[in-house]
Image 1: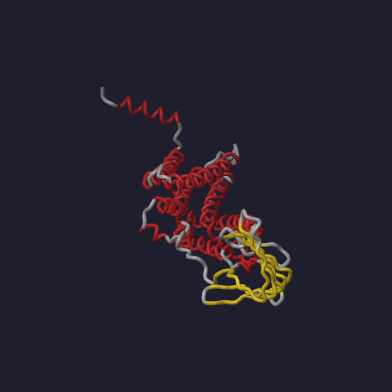
Image 2: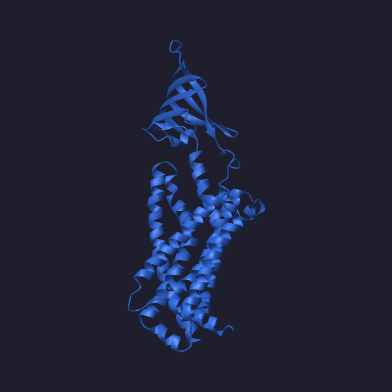
Length: 372
């Protein structure tokens, strides 16, 4: 049908162009932020591309929703501007008749948003946390950069290696300052190498000196020299990651099976992304209804404001549910049900050309028809 096909074709062109632009902007911003985090030691610099990819993947539900909303607004407002909408109105098409072609175009996008929000989003967050955790829990020797003082993972040791001898497993002119068990020790050696035993890793130092001093008692300084000295510097296996699992990395099925407040808050965010995408398809029709003589600047600003407000309410609602200020069902019904009701009422008003004057006249006519 000409009406449906023409709308879907223009929506496809506008959606594709908008998606490319938004994805490029988000990738650029994510790259800058990820590089900043890597420079502060949050990630391995070699994993910047992976972290950026996972982060953009986590943003894709919002990017797709915004692209869909903008494409609907751009297509329908263009039809108003070029008086094409007048032709469809005179042929018997109202604004409500645009719902069918819009949802025929939008349903694959809505399915992708659902899959991303419920399945891919926790997986991408989990991969980011794993990369971050691996880098934070790497061994002490792996933290050492030649010519730089580097603190250990627990913050109790400071390492210095003048230069690498043969890669990461050995070094020369090693310096280690330790503060633990009520003692301060300074160990220096001409060379050192890593020795692995089961899950533990030890640093074997050769031809060095060790100074030991109890904290707060400077009179008991012990100095010893050694030909070989061994000190534990880390483990091959990371610590138990099950002790604290961020809620945004948990699978959706796990959240449904464990309905605690943090899990319900995360569910409100993931399900809310899907419901928001659905509501924006409906809201896009009345929002794009403009007077060609006035222009569409106000409607464009209002549309962007509505999108930002909706997403901020999703974030606020997540915090409210997590702290027990709102119930899960009450928040979902209030926000998403209210947005759906607003969209349908606004669409009915635009479809029937309702105004305050016409509603007042209708009320007067109905009151006159009532029998006395």
